Amino acid sequence: MLSDVEIIYRSALYPRMVTSGVVAPERAIADFTSEDDEDGRRVYTISVGRGSLLPGWPEVHDYGCRTAIESNVERALIKQAPLKRPGDTVHYLGSFKLDVSAVLGAPQKFLELAVLHHPRPNLEEHCNIVMRRNAIEARRIEVSAERTSILVHLRLSLYEPEAHICACDDDLIDTFGNVTLTLEQVEPS
Ligand SMILES: [Zn+2]
Image 1 (cartoon, rainbow, N blue to C red):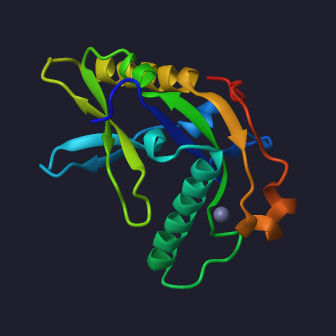
Image 2 (cartoon, rainbow, N blue to C red):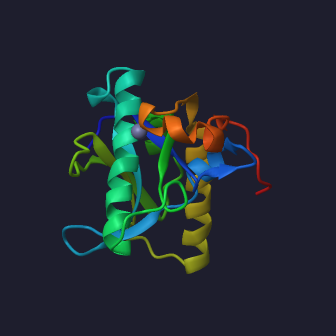
């Protein structure tokens, strides 16, 4: 479990997070992904990079580049054919900062949050923001409202967005070279 003085980074990815030429907070953190943890319990996760292993922006951007590469490796395995570039591929566009203390400060009445180090192949710095149900009884609608509040809280906690185009994406500069990262909400909620 990461301590509440740590910083984490959320990678911005093309095309999934881009609307109207920007990556806005509501796209950078659209929702949790559901998965089962080691004990087979249902948990909800958001991928981030661990700041203590990423001392500067060059390292943060290198991590982001590797998240895109690993995502493309998985996509090629699923497609069982080479990916069309950029039609089928994912690309790194920069990162947002987030404090673990801010994550842990989100409303948690029926749900609980933690940030866990969760290394993956070629992504030693990978962590998950993990959300799970606590033992308190609640109606589905109450849990769903809290999940929405948590997402809003996480979006508002993003700061210092830093756009970046990888050297490996120089050929696609006309496609997404102008995309910026913003802290402004773009889509009506
Ligand atoms: Zn790259």
